[in-house]
Image (cartoon, rainbow, N blue to C red; front, side, top):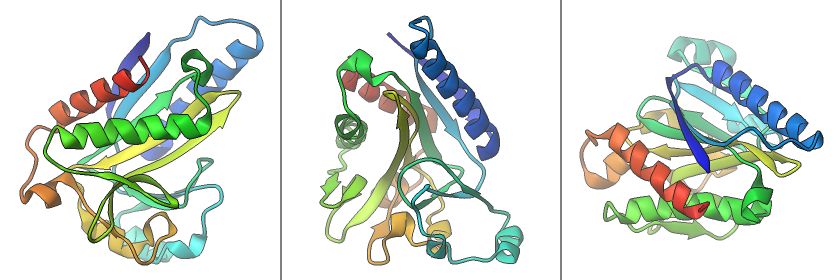
Length: 217
C-alpha cells in the first residue's frame, strides 16, 4: 500500500528537511525490524531553485551568487544522484519514500519504473517520449530534449528525492545551467510541446501519481 501526500508549494530547503526526516525514520525502523511506516509518494512544487547532485560539477551553474540573488533563485548542493537541475512553479515534483524491497526492486529497476510512469503519463497526452542512452530521465527526440529529470538517493533500499516533470515550467531558467551536466541537449515542457499552457496541473499530478502506483503495484 502506498500513501499519496501533497505538500503544495514549499521551499526546497523545507521539503529536503522533511524528506530527510521521513527517510531516516524509515531506515531506523527497518534496522529495528519494524515495518509500521507507510511507503509514500509525495508531490510538491518549489519556488525557483537550482539543485546540484552530490557528484555534480559546480561549473554547470552559470551564475554567480550575486546573479542568483538578483534573479531570486536559490541554490543547494544536495545528496541525490545526478548533476544540476532547476525546480520552479509549473513543475510537478514527486519524492517517493519507498522501501524497494517491498517491490522486489533494485536501484536501476526503480529508476526505470519512474521513467516508465512518466512515459505512460505523456503517452496519455499524445506526447511520445522515451529514454536516451547514457542519460537518466525522460526525453523527446529530434532534437533530444529532456522533459523530466530524475535524481535519487537510496540507502538500505529506502529512497528519497525523485523526479521533476516540466508542465508549465518557465524554461528560461534552464539557460543559466548545463542541465544534468549536458551542454548539447535541450529541455522542454508539456506546455512547449502542446503549444499552450496546461490548465489542469493538479489533474496532471493526479494522473502521474496513478501511473507511479501502477509501476509499484
